[in-house]
Image (cartoon, rainbow, N blue to C red; front, side, top):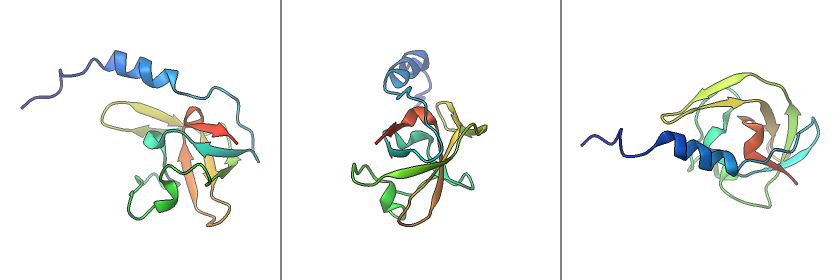
Length: 106
């Protein structure tokens, strides 16, 4: 079965843009992740929901912005995301790349 024409991707992207946080993030800011679709490990490896439990939706877990203005492009099946932030979990020191619109200031 062909699912390529099932969705209008322009409409999907419009909805996704509405759920982004447009606040500017700076180095040292505390953030929580709103949308994990653009988030990867620092090396670009996709997250694994079983191995990366800290990356599951949890408003208690926060991250620190350690780099801004990055230009990594993350290709998903549906779209490309610019991963312009590097965030760190202060408890585990693990680093992640993410689109700044997908995190919110805490």
